[in-house]
Image (tube, chains in turn orange, yellow):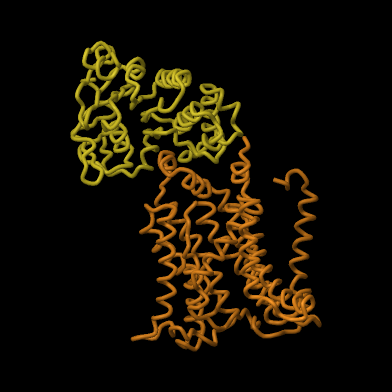
Length: 354
Length: 239
């Protein structure tokens, strides 16, 4: 859109953003490697939000159990690349398997919910998310598959060529810590994920999703195979979750069912809604914001209190949730369609004509 | 009609919601190029019949379109065979623009040039839509939304148009306009099955009519004869 009006300005912007993203981990690393890890988790949440956005934003199907697909991806990686089963498959094999299994899980969830909408769909998906988590928790006997609540440890990092992404390296005189290397890998994946999402949105299937979101009977009357198109939304959305889960397991080196609780599903949904359902850039902004702001608060609230009052009045964790909740309420009051809404959502909420 | 096979042929059609029978074994037919109406009171089973034809509801019996059975066809396959439903209650995509709505009507087609030509034709028939091409469908008036729903159906190049209560909830002046559009669509050779509560109006545009009551067809005749029928006049024309 802008590319046609100001091609030079557009590309200058792209180059600028790319340079900033490239330099970011080096700057963050100065503040501490913890911040690079936070940035990596933020990118994973962008993957998750974009995946959920396909289901919720494009197709209008409320999914409260989305984290289940993250879990499927993470456990796939953990089981295929750890001493648990003694398997150590390479990353280019596991990542597609994880995406595929998550995809299958998406269809398994999607198939029985095809006739459901709104609240009913939300409840079923919520239950599905819990089923997956509880399965991970209990699949330790009689055959120990998931190692139960103890989780799986010593998960392999990504290794490409001779490069171990968890170890530090020095190239061209510059030190690259593990998280920094992961950051660049995730950035590369992120570009691919965004491109896929943009293409999907503008595709025939993207239009079919929007049609189903708006009016299912009318969509059928237009000749859209609503069953397949809905299943496709679940499957595509889930596969992004699977990729994110795989990367999560490889970065952390340890996973347990605790990482895949309902709270996480709600968090991802909040990112999508806060950012602006249906708008890829809005969803990315929402995911970044909700990933970074709580961490910023965590690191600033305590010193600020000690400075102002000389002692700790409120536990930062409590305040974090309070500020977080208040921010959500305020956003929904002031910008009900999200911070950066899809054009048609914005028009609807503004009550404007075209 | 005896010589040529009708375009749509329904025999002994049963439709039930759960255990409650809404359509109890009806039969009718629509010949190619004909406009036929299905009239009756609220709850007579008219819309249910149409939904069964559009495969949105499970049904028993015989439904033949263009010589083959509709019974096991999925709803989305019908449009490719030239049978398009204009759903009850307008059923436009409220948050899509008028132009996008019309585009969705051609979702199953890939002949770009022909689609553009059809769009011009629809705009010619419904100039209001062209004026409002960039506007969200949800912001149109009720009558304009009904026009849009018809326009969208035309974008699929239908041979048989199933119209479900096009006059519902519209101001009388808009009802007139919508029916003028329906007549010009019929004049272009599109076969129309019209389900309508407004019996007088439906019978004034259709060639033949069927009267439904309590899930059954109680009368079948030419529109003129039905208009003159004392029973119809008393029950459906308020005389």
